Length: 140
Image 1 (cartoon, rainbow, N blue to C red):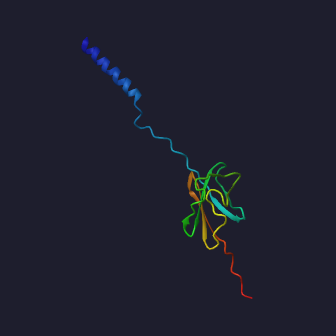
Image 2: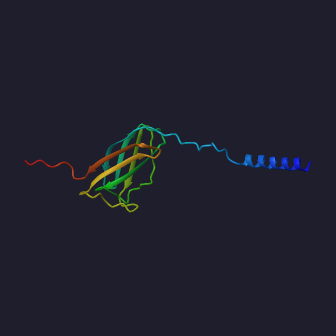
């Protein structure tokens, strides 16, 4: 009788332990990937700020991030961590000059590139190159 009681106690203990253990085949839920496109349509440089606008086929609320490069190096004053939300197929970011370490104006001799990507859609990315020199003036 003692032997049966000991076996029953061991079985009950094993059952209790196994109910506390996670299932071996449980997998974490994967985040669904988002597909879509991002385009940059224009840059507007004013005395007080620089603004980029574009379009996207990503869903409203999708976090779009940007990084500005000058002569192939990241610009340290650009708000890299800022999330620009897609809204009605469009996005826009405006960064003021002279605030948060931003210069008072852009360097007219630099070649700039804006890199744009969606946080949850790594295949959705765009590049936009520009400079401030403008087209050459024809000789008259």
